[in-house]
Amino acid sequence: MRKQLIALLALMVSFALVAAACGSDDDDASDDSSSSASESSSAGEPTEDDEPTADMSESNEETEANSDNADSGAVDTGPVAGGTMLIQSTQVPRHLNGTVQSGYATAVPGTQLNASPLLIDENFEPQPYLAESWEISDDGLSVTLNLVEGAVFHDVKPITSEDVAFSITTSRDNHPFRTMFAPVTGVDTPDDLTAVINLSEPHPAILLAMSPGLLPIIPEHVYNDGQEIREHPCNAGECFVGSGPFTLAEYEAGSIIRLEAFEDFFIPERPYLDEIIIEIVPDPATITLGLENGTTDLALPPGEANIVRLQGNDDVIVTAEGHAAVGQVNWLEFNLADPALSNVEVRRAIADGIDREFLTDVLQQGTTIATTTGIHQGSPFHNPDTEHYGAGVEAAQQRLADAGVDASSISFAVDYIPPVQLAQAEYVVQVLQDIGFEAELNISPDFPTWATRVATGEHQMTLNNVWNWGDPVIGVHRSYLSTNNVGAIWTNNTGYNNPQVDALLAQAGSTFDVAERIDLYHQMQTIVNEDVPMVYLSNGVFWQAFQPRVQNPPIGVWGQLGPMHEVWLAE
Image (cartoon, rainbow, N blue to C red; front, side, top):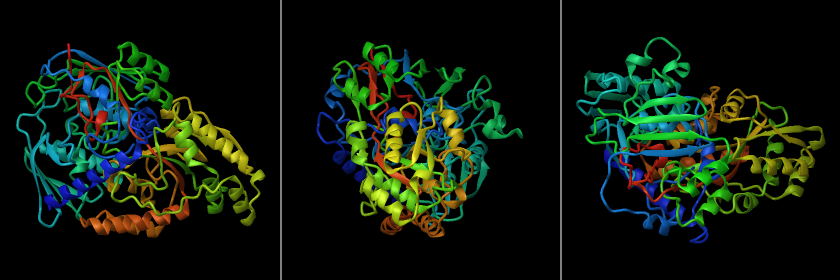
């Protein structure tokens, strides 16, 4: 059974590499960015709950990154302990507890603060982390984790199988990705170092689901106190207790997150860095300037223009390597509870009016790739043969006329993830107006405000940036299952409900047969594209920029969403 899982992961990696190679047009224009996948991309799921880019594998994706620059940055002197690395971001986390929150803004600090049972290497194969070994039963209905002996939380209390069980069930019951651990019926803890995860059905993504950014191990003795865990005071701040390579030394919401090396981390002589400082800045230009003048060590350059600008700087390494497991898809999603948008012909007309190539080639300056489904092109499950729409404004107007819809009687407000999706949102407003609707922007001041509006259904339509997270079970199902309309961001925020799609996803999420899964996901994409709960726009690519002194940079399959205990700074 374990071999079947690894074979599936390996297949996904090979497709990701092909997609990455196809995604860049020219070698020098290349670096792929996502919705600026970099931070644009990161803006979506990237952000908190952060959801939203897409590809798979720590791979040296053939995605051109200023790889020449990257090579020139290597300093082969061996790891040096010490130093402070400054990361800048425009994304504001709601808190740091990744068992109940997804996304870039939470995961970047969260994977430094909390360890997961497994790591995933560049071949998408699981590797030991808090679990030194694991075994999947022959029937696929249980997974046994054998934990590292001597691992402790930041309050120096031991990490036990009870904490693993608590973390898994907490995530299952509260995380936006409900399908990630939905098959878990319980976790047995025969001793302090053994956790047996029991499943109701085989789960093809179970090992991937126990990797960084998806399953942080949190202390039961802190969180199991009867308080609502989504609002728990120890999700951030002075009482935060983690299990990872860094401790939380300072947290100023919306401003700074300072992490200090944990001296009792279970991997000897790690982490190398003394500190990581994550500085949250509202102005994307500040990040670009910081990278150019050498004060910022690492960032996802926000905005296409900044990516292109930094690619021309020989003193900064810009690369699309890393984040291969993320699989970002940018889309315009509809709130189907809205009276006008409950009409599928209105949704199809809007889809007809949008020119994806204009978005990707002009607004995003070639840093993203046009797409027509919710499964990233780097996935073996992507279906390229679905309805594309995009016939143009006149076709949209004719569709509405045929349906007896008077566009001039309908008003729309377009939401977007601030600040990086503003240009795209302005374009969508213009398209809506060209079709004949009344349309305007709805501007949220920050990510949490936007996320709350969308999670509570206060919006009509919004641009969004959602990630596949390596396997559709984890990152795709959540957006379409009728049972996952739960009032949280990056769940089924459209209110989409199609029993046939529910059934197809249930089948695809409970078999290890790759060919069968491909067929089921292809059917699902065809149906969803006919229903148009969202208009698919582009696949994002994560562009990273860092100083040459940053060694062992985070270019693994999770990129910056993974632990940085191996990163060090050259002198």
